[in-house]
Image 1: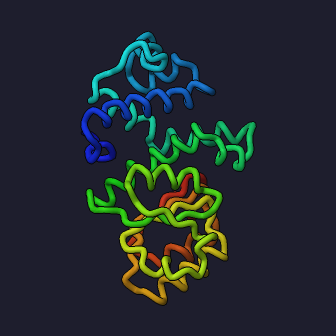
Image 2 (image 1 turned 30 degrees about the vertical axis):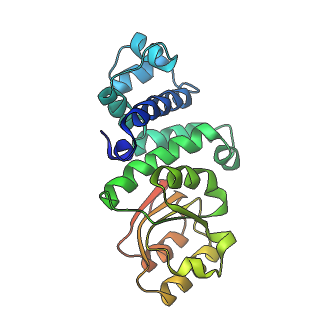
Length: 220
């Protein structure tokens, strides 16, 4: 079973897989025809329709395969860009379906980077709380809002952690630089940003061993 679900009780994991699959399909069906989606996923349109409508539950292995494709960074990026054609970033970050899509995509990456070791803390900016809370819940990690916890001693001992941000603003970079200076053992292995900005380079210089993903835009 996929590592994202392998730590859960088997029956619960199977049910959660199907719920996740239906939720992801509902996101893509908002702007993608079922015919196009079936071609992307490599399954018949009739079968896909039955999965999406709850008439048939695919095998566990099939659900894992479909979720892996639907949470691929390239496909998620295309979905987000399509959403932003008509709606704002604020709207997206309040949309339960899209925040779950992004969170599941992040989970796939985080689980592979941490190789099964515990992710002790998920750090987030206020704007990304919905995404980060979903990730933290699945990983059973502590969730800390950098904006709220600014200056708190809790930020000095975050252990193995991942940072999920919408934007890396100057305020956050300064706070993390302070944390890093006070505790050199702070270990951030993964950083996610919705949109690339010049502050990204300052952030990554603090945690040079971290994998950094920018959903929209990239370093030149």
